[in-house]
Image 1 (cartoon, rainbow, N blue to C red):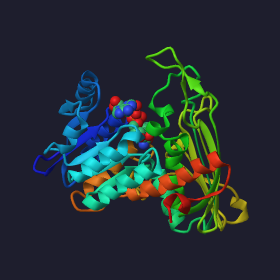
Image 2 (cartoon, helix red, strand yellow):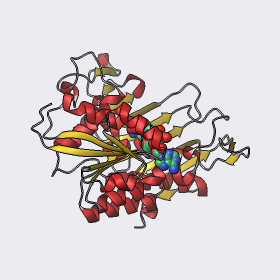
Image 3 (cartoon, protein in one colour):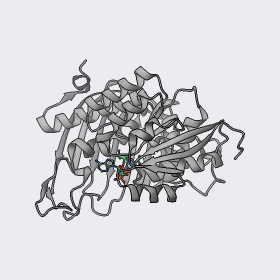
Image 4 (cartoon, helix red, strand yellow):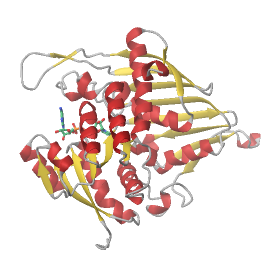
Length: 380
Ligand SMILES: NC(=O)c1ccc[n+]([C@@H]2O[C@H](COP(=O)([O-])OP(=O)(O)OC[C@H]3O[C@@H](n4cnc5c(N)ncnc54)[C@H](O)[C@@H]3O)[C@@H](O)[C@H]2O)c1
């Protein structure tokens, strides 16, 4: 990596799973892509001084601090990368924008629509580059799926079906943490569903109306620091039917109570002339059925989304070697750094807000047992 390139200082807020994934991505990006600048992992923040210092050392970040505001205001930090729970995002994004820093914020944008709107207002007012962490868009197969839908390979989309299944909450002995607290973790709809809703808006367009149901099977959980049990404030499993502005229809399921399903998501679009389906378990493949083909070829073909003509594929390994979860984060930061300092970042926080509106409409629908228009949440 040439040292003659201008440096871009990165500060990562939070050192959990996403802090690790993002730090890895900044380190790997210059080795995968030719970039106009060199990211420098300058600072990492967390509440536990010893733990954040150890994480910074392991992830290759120069310094650690327990004060996220000091990170945001540090003169060497150009990009504030927010990897903390959703309930903290809006305040950190607003402070970073006010300090004139570019912002990459993990999904969901916030724990509710009102806070998400505040984050968007802050970046809009400051005019800083901003992006939401919908990393899965950057998997070659999903990027190819979106491109094929946009190119009309399935005709007009009629139906979208998406599900995200995990077993994260199945065990009732898992102690209460931020994921079970509504104001900090949001909901299963916004945590897992945000990715699915993003795919839907990206591939098929705006969602007009939703009807959802939610269930929480384990209503109380043990606490680590007390004998009293604490009430779980979030849905563990939800599903929704939706209507798109185009007239297309969709179904969504997001659940964290599915035994032996680790992080299994899928998305399928059925159009007037074809079908496309992606399954994360086989993340370098795409299934395609082309209604224009002769009857003897009736069925779905498996596309290996690793050909040099496919999005991102040529930047990685020779065909047949595959890419993984890590590649989605590397592609994400490389796409941003490639446009540094002037280009627009995409998807931006505005996209995160549009997704949050649909999630909140689903939450409201489940709570009130009625169809909810997304415009009702947006106040328009
Ligand atoms: N894009 C993806 O694939 C993906 C995957 C997992 C998580 N996420 C998102 O990333 C964000 C962080 O998730 P994670 O899995 O890295 O979480 P984590 O629990 O592993 O880490 C959370 C970090 O935030 C800090 N923190 C700050 N305030 C906190 C509070 N009040 N309670 C608990 N921790 C607090 C913790 O110290 C820790 O460093 C969330 O918004 C989550 O939805 C995205």
